[in-house]
Image 1 (cartoon, rainbow, N blue to C red):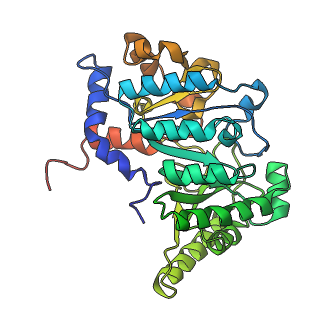
Image 2 (image 1 turned 30 degrees about the vertical axis):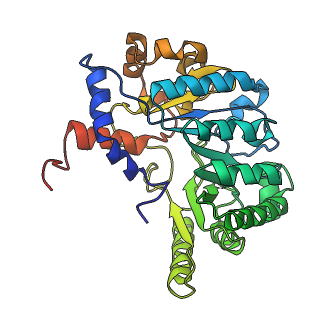
Length: 353
């Protein structure tokens, strides 16, 4: 299923944006509009997942002010952002005005994405997500309560499953077009439970199950075990579609990791893709990319200076100084490959149908 919300083939639709970024880097044009932005509302989270890429932000204890986020949305609209994702750093639904801010973002014309652990969510928030969001991903990451508790340090597996059931009913009742997805980040403790979590996702009525290796640490993955489970998941999804006539889909993303170890890999020489996204964190700073949240060396500016900074000579220099050896696993790795191989080298020979 190449054509999905998780496929980074979507980057090829940004071909002109890629070209304009390269021109801007060469001082031959202006920086194009960013595709989207991610806003971290808070660093506070009720879980302590052992594979979380925001572990270093937990102790910061920051939550943004509502009026600041409203001003950020105005700036992002002015800069031409098309989407806003509320995720990362902490659990966004813990913020009391969460429902209001996603409604505002929707009314301003943004497509809204949400990432949540779904442990503290209430029915009003579920209804707001179904009405105002385009996408919502729920982090499950386990196939049973014991593993969930081990990974996330909280006995809330059954609560999440119950909330998934409630959310599915709300989506159906309101005929919502929300792309509602259960996510499974593979680590050492859960790599034997991918198929179990897949089946439980299906049993809860969720139509999409998404899997990828966690990228914050280097884990000891059993690649053969994982590949066999992914085949079982895909076979089950095929059975659902063909024999049961039910729309159940299994998505995965393994192209950004080493195929032999599922560890970090960069299949490109230079990073050009960071201007695709604006990352605003709960401390008020704008960071270079989503993989470098709360790293001092990745601070671009404070959000109040974003209009002046974005596309400036200082910004251009910051992009040119990116050192891949100091980078973690790259969430935008496929986009960087597309820029290098489809725009700079033109391996696709795009002028030929």
